[in-house]
Image 1 (cartoon, one colour):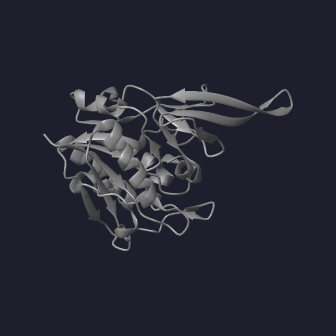
Image 2 (tube, helix red, strand yellow; image 1 turned 90 degrees about the vertical axis):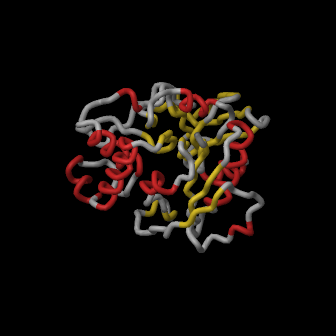
Length: 263
């Protein structure tokens, strides 16, 4: 069975997501030894990038989403991953995920046909709360890393994600969501629960936490897989710098500028 990585990268006026995809693809080749396919829109000039993807697939960019800090968040259409992937087994990864090990090969060894993260850890805040879709809803699932095979159940999950995206205002009101913009995380959470009859099916959860590095955290590279994390923490009435050194740890970086500085 064919195995590979799938990335979605739609450039905005402020962020070069394709450059991020190239960096992520190179690390996927290096540490996972997997081919990488990218999904982008036809306006992307691929000749600017020094990398040959396994496949380049085109999809019209939907720029109708909410803007965050003046950045357009082009994240719609992720539900097409099931129909677009050229692989029998796929790792769907956000472009701002920093691969530093072969950990993501573990889902290929498991029987389950669909897996995503249900719990997170922040490198500088180990006791950080687990996010809920709303104050009176259930925990958020994360679309940052998704492993899937082409099965009828997996197809149903992605079809439900499409339904949620196309009727997002309804689901915002139904679940009293905390964020006004469309989020793949929320669409995934709702879709997985629908397909599993509104039950909490632990078989779909990747059995380790998704590691986050927040947007107000600065990461410095000491070597190819070793990093120093710097964070401002409020203690005893003063802001203090805290430092954490990690090596061989994969993590999701919310600070896009910092991500590009590292890679």
